[in-house]
Length: 237
Image: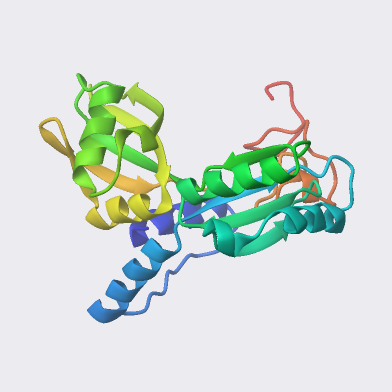
């Protein structure tokens, strides 16, 4: 993420508080950057979710393990976690193909299990796109700019015109490909080299209106009827 862009996000969060924002960075040599890129390729993962359906987490996990032998199907896991709803989350190394193999194997051994694959994507913001470019033209240009990226793996979340006649887009794609596009900084779409940056996530609670957590974890007073800007209860909410 660009330092200036990160600083602007932080200044937005702390606006009006009197807090000044300073971003400190460390130098990274070329060898370290090369190793980080290689690690990113190795860590491409997909998440397989097995629904608990009111069962104990340990019982669901035990049933999965009894019916699946990872060595035999050539699948490796990065992590196993319990979700906030008590489901089993299996993070699979190797991307979508390996995740599909694991899902099918679990389904065959436990036919009553409800299994979904959660896309492990990053969202990018792309600006300055020519006004005549459609979604197909956008995905085609992106796939041609990164080796191994297929058009089918790109989801265009939005493509909207701005006040200057060009367009801004939000796209979702695999983390490894997203990192490569962010590293490039721009991508040629039509006649123009368009800016690429990661989507900035600012976590805000819509119960107390403070930043840094979500409403499901909030223990503060309920201010949901207050204005998001001024914080006071008013008819303009």
